[in-house]
Image (cartoon, rainbow, N blue to C red):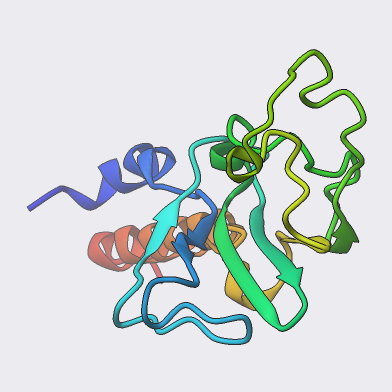
Length: 157
């Protein structure tokens, strides 16, 4: 049992990271408008300034949805918009992608032109994005509870 007076020193070790879903629409339970939380558990994003991202790729009636942390997608995707504030935006243009490649095999898709419309939706402040601000306020509440408990143990009213 940890003594109660050590509690304020141990609270900074508590995690205040952003939690996001990580799935693609080819997996069951990961659609455009829902995520089955029993199948896909949330992951913690590795960076402090991270955001949750939902990428919606459309070609006609075909949709492909990707959900992940922004820091996980930065190394894989080259069309992420520069403005990553809350909301949905179209993908950035990629004019210099595969410029010096002479390829006659259409299936390789080097220029990333398969999808007609690519939309990025970013969230950090919504209820389901779990921005991790709740623990900062509860440190003060736990500290006040500890002070009241100590005063009651000492018999001070």
